[in-house]
Amino acid sequence: MRNPLLLLFLLPAMALAQQPATTSVEFDQALEKIAQGKHGEAIPVLERLMVSSPSEPVYYHLGGAYIHEKNLAKAAAAYEDGAARYPLSARLNYAAGLANEWRMEPGKALLYYRRAVALDPILGYQGAGRYDPEIDALYIPVVHDHRGANSCSGRLYYDDKKMHYIVYLVYSGWGLGNDDSFQVPFDQLQYTEVDRKKGQLAFDYSVLTLLTNLSGPRRRIASGEESRVDLKFVFKQPLAGYRGKPWTKEDIKFFFIEPEMGDRFLKFLEGKGVRTTQRAD
Image (tube, rainbow, N blue to C red):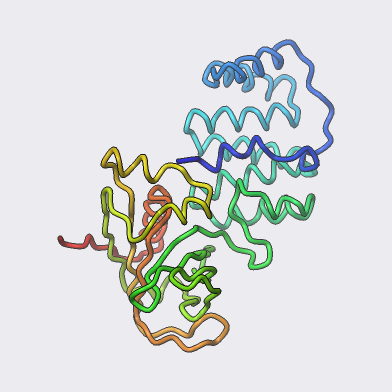
């Protein structure tokens, strides 16, 4: 399944801050190693350049090398330091937001995303990150049972204090829907029930694959890997629906399109003091 972090390097040219080119031999060697997929070998070179000859491209490529080595903490630190030194760099601010988004640090992610979009509004429409400037929150694509029968596709938004859900597509009808939308502070969650499934789908995934440009789910089913992470949210009391619409349920169950994000969000909830329980078979 694709990692949105890797899409960071596909930003359009207009998103890149105008910075003097770094032309040192060491920097060229680091770029060559990156092109060869040897990110681990490029890191020490870029770290030395960050001290001896700092530049916007050095910070940017160092953060990217850390990402490829699966070190999000160092990647975020590199991007943040670079954004502090080069505050007019839209791509460094955007990258810092993206790294913190995947670390489930919404406060930091939102700070940098706002700066990036202010510098270059087109970044608010990029597919690499999941920041909605209109709602000013991060989001995760999810599906849930609509009225106990149909399946809905929507966005589960979250920030440091609350989460809210907005329905976008209602399957078995193909219409817009918002009657299951809601907003809720994290302290109003009584507990979260976790249900992990392997090789099971609620409906024909080919439609969802087409809509979300994903290709990994079918491979996961074939290999018997975990294909779903369901989280059922049980609220302490009935909630008001999004935009004041009535809410008649005290719980809602989500199927995370990307199991990795389901796990990340679960850890995020635990950090907010939300109790979790595993569903018994």
